[in-house]
Image (cartoon, rainbow over all chains, first blue to last red):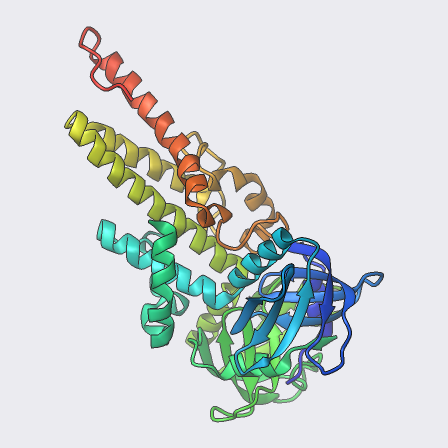
Length: 164
Length: 259
């Protein structure tokens, strides 16, 4: 799969939602933790050598799992190979929580499910489709029927707790 | 630069919904700067979220190329082959050449341009935040209506509440349809989203909220008491206004609704 590195590099220079120097270790056996500048830009996590403008790499944060590791640390793994983890170490547990929270929300699919949830709830309460007034109710990306079934079920529970 | 390509390819083929798909003609090898000459190459394209993938064929199991649709614009373009309906994805970055693509009909061209130009994460986030605040308003006004009708039996404050809210929305709070923004009016002043207006106007929705340390869905949601206080301020203020108006209208009447 090819992609234009210049386009990704340009994205990595965009303002970040979160950025910090963290200790990072890749999934390869025997890899050593190194100090990296880690930047969250939309649904990509970029990592840089601390003295370079060019990113070393990027992780697309779709279909990933963010998990707490030993205190002050977290890991990111991807659904197709959950044992392959990228480890990050923060300065404080608080910083760690902040990163985990931001990373969990940093996926397009998460945003899509949130949107469909809100749309449904509003429709239930008011009897009106909130997207209609903007003329975007037909857009494919906002349709409930396009969601895979497990995603629908898994989604609703935790959100109700948060909102009520 | 490394990329977690296996996961990206896995996402491309996953059961999460595709936002648009179809055959398009493309010029130049996928992922490399296109050379717009000849008839190009027909590939199967799939748009998922803010990612545009191309495949050798509809059944292919490995994507040929990936374009991340952030910081780009999509516009109609001239195709090297006259009968094609072309458009280009242009990046606002030095040395990045546009991707030239072409559909085989005008309707397909329009649908692609529309889908691609709304593919950014920022657009999705904008709609989510808007609905999030609408839902919250709906819940607050329902709760308020209940408590008001218990105390006063008044339907009037409620109708004022919804007037107030809709004027806030129309004041450029949410601009999905490329209409020119209207300045922040009195209606939106106390809503959290409305405070963002001046920057929205300058930057457009794509860059909206980036780089402000805000999480994608508004951070207030994660802590209900914060959210409650935040919206509570607006409600308290609104109630005071209605009460003042009521008192004004009914001078001489007893004060009937202390908060």
